[in-house]
Length: 381
Image (cartoon, rainbow, N blue to C red; front, side):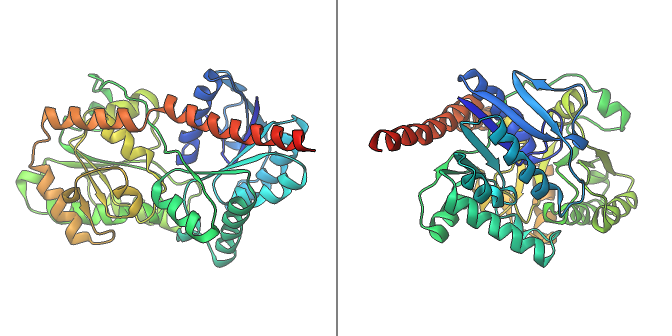
């Protein structure tokens, strides 16, 4: 089975939820017998990487203009998929899904994965939001099969477009905590005495709220002044928001912006955190939250549907955008020990529900359903 993938910038080590999803999914699909080619975006890829864990990676030129990048790259990617004689074209995210129409006209069998309604994000102007909604429409209406990464997304698509979808979540690799503390030493961090958040520096992640809440609870309180806030991530396209956020962070020496981290450094910063916070206004199914939970971290998150879907207790949610409520939750859980038994139970829950091998198996089942349907149609002719 030849699968061609578009809608992602590529991998490995490319920032983004879709990119992380694809980096873990497709090597597992190869293990299930798939022949996978990812059409990546050249500006984001390491020149020497043309294969990753037996997944072939094509470096295709594209603009890095945030309004044109995805749609122009996906358009050319559809033609590449046709040239490669793909059995399945797998398109990720609703923006690229606007090309489902083109792919179908070219005779390709299309599976679309909906990672969430990107048109609610504040970074997009009105025209971009219209294009994203059209992408959701064409992907939902015309794809041979639709995958949604969470129940809230699936319920929305089924209600709006009157079609059945497949719910296959994001996953996570359970990794042991690391003992090394080189990163902590570099940034003068104390073991279990820092709050961690991870993600792109965009408004919907709510990091501005987190910095404001952190400033309120640590101002003048000696007991809490020993804690620091570590923000891991960067902006895809530097703009007004990311620059203002960086300026805000500089005003408090206990707020540390690390930029994007991968590999050992990221594992280390997860391993030694005292609290993980995700204050998002919008998510599909946050892989960073699954990662934090897989490390057994105490977590608090905003009350948006995607975060509620993961399975944390009610008391670990706060109203998105409510800085006072966020500050109160942080203050509470900075002083409440997350027991070893709670940590182990959380890790086991993640292991049972978000295993990449099982996710790959379910995805291959979707591919087979499309191809078997095609065979039945040919037999009826």
